[in-house]
Image (tube, rainbow over all chains, first blue to last red; front, side, top):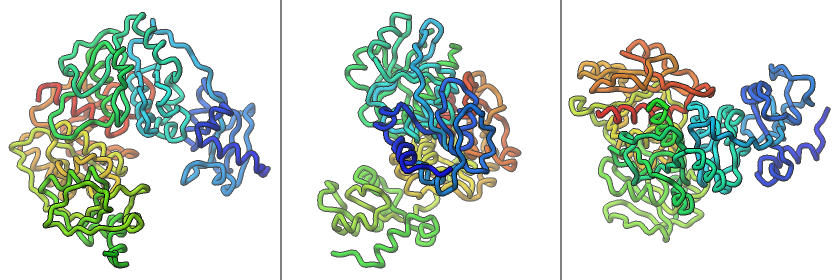
Length: 248
Length: 248
């Protein structure tokens, strides 16, 4: 079956946020990420386009279409397309149950998709179940986020809506909300709370005044050398690890 | 002064490793990175090309040439050139004095320039003075490494030569050489040595057998969630921070 011009146009358009939100669809590419996609049940797959050598077992209930390499190149957002492309529906928003969580991430205007992908991967490693994000944070379904997340995108509940209400609910449920910045308390002597929500700010502007005003505390990773700042994903990893190291 | 065709060709060629090594020259771009370059004395600047609005104070002893925006675009490796481009000489190799260092990084085939840049930035934050790297690790003067390092490239002594001899010298000087992998000792209960050399392996293949055989110990960051691995820069940051946290 050859792809129609309209199908190609729709799938290509999903590289852009606006089209993703209008169609409530996004794209997952590559053998490994699609294999993981088929192994989870949070995301529903709309259709799969594959070249003959993909090597995956495609469930019968999913609409799957064999395409030529040239056609895959046409619909792919990758420089080197990797055998299979899935069009996936936006998942339903799952309301978190704060009574059973003790470690939450809050992202205030993280703009770089590679950084968000790394943060998702790191958060998943340390058992974070829910990430809250400001409206200006790069969206979860950006293809570069999905690639960089290494599959964590399937496991972490990412809520980019009603940030301030969610933070208020966190506090009501006993969470201490703590931002990472350059002038806070020393991480190495910090008495971590039992329920910890960590706030990361934008790569260039730090944490906004609005969110800073809501935070209970500030935390700093002590610097020995001269570099001005740490990468936000690295800083998050260090603090999440310190929290787990403290036995929580 | 208009740039000659040969000058344009030489500067553009420095995007590639081979030309960098043949000419012993590399390129630094952008107002911030060039400003930092002019504020240090490890790297000698060969020449600077600038558009009129660069806003830097250029020392008289450096050959500086005003160019048009179009010319800057021709010699730049950036998608959006940023006002100034410096051609810089390779620095002399500085032999480390292991008796005064207590924290060293060893990189075994790190291939991604963004990862190396982040590792340099993180290492500099935690006061690492020397990084040893295997021959197959991406080179320090790759433009993407320089951009991602945020200036740490000027401060960290990067030695990509004689790796095994250097590791032997480290051990003679009382360093414990420890690799980060998925089946080592628990980071959170690890008794850090006073002199600590941390080994990071390639993003896809981990640490080579040759280097593993030299290591004194293996270390693992405990996983709570499901993600297969951490980004190498994040993992390095977590372990370097744990070392500093232990009071060393």
